[in-house]
Length: 131
Image (cartoon, rainbow, N blue to C red; front, side):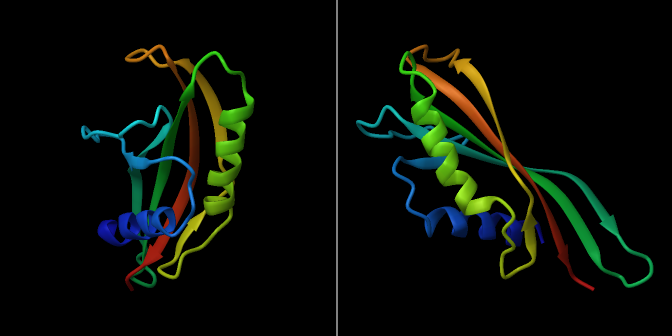
């Protein structure tokens, strides 16, 4: 179940045309010359088993940290958040991962690299599966 959810999310990412690299949040490789990127984390804080039908529901949240050059205002992060929103907001995958409306929070300059600004897009989702 969990692997199905992760695969669905990364499938949406890989089948989209993000203008900057998208990597897992714990990525440690080289991003090349790009000074902008997105880092993905998927968390699963809640799951349920339904007694009446044997079905399962997993609730989770997708976080996408969006890193842009600091000192250049809100426009670039907003443009990238629009692209992410188009991919995930109110979408349902073929494997029944249902996304809700996402939200964005400006996190300010990145503590590890002050030349970057971090905005955090997050969206809740539910997965309904296995009966």
